[in-house]
Length: 129
Image 1 (cartoon, rainbow, N blue to C red):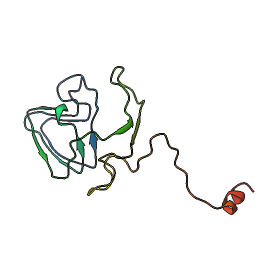
Image 2: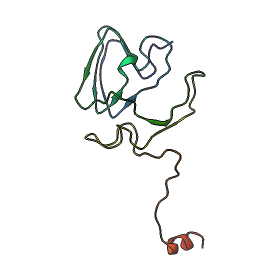
Image 3: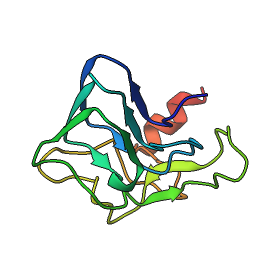
C-alpha cells in the first residue's frame, strides 16, 4: 500500500511543476507527498497541502508554490476510495487560476458550466447541411 496519494519517492530526486497536491486519500503518512530518506523533491508553480507531507526526505518549495485550498468545484469524499468521481475543475476565485504561473493544475475555471464556443448562425447552418 502506498504511503502517498499524490507523490511518493524512494531514493530519487524529482521536480514537480504546475501540479496540485491537495485532497489525496492515502491512508498512511503523507497523503499528498511521501519522501523516503535519500529522496528529494522541488516544487515550483504548484499548490501543496503541507499538512499531507510525510517521510524523511528533503523538500524545496520555490516562492511560486501556493499553500492554500485550490478550490476544486466538487472534490468528492475520501470515504470510498479509490474513486474517479468528483469535479476537479477550478472554482472561480481559485488561487490556482491565473497568477504569475498561469493556471496551475487545470486550464480553466468552469464549475457546473458547459464550455461553449462562439460561432455564427451561418456556421451552425453549414454544420447541418
